Length: 59
Image (cartoon, rainbow, N blue to C red):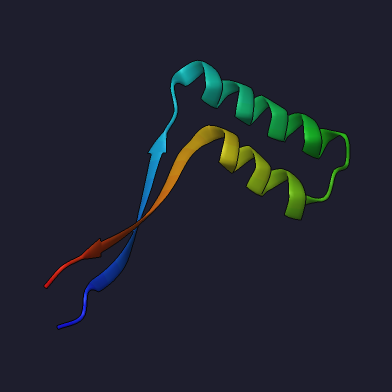
């Protein structure tokens, strides 16, 4: 028998003050003519708490 491997991705919104800072930072970057391809993902990384976990289960 082989162990099973998996990945779990948890995406949760952060607390309100940090989410507001991320939103304001993204809006400021767009206002300053930063490329959307850079400003949008960075703002999402600030607003959301993203955790990636690998796990292995014995069978």
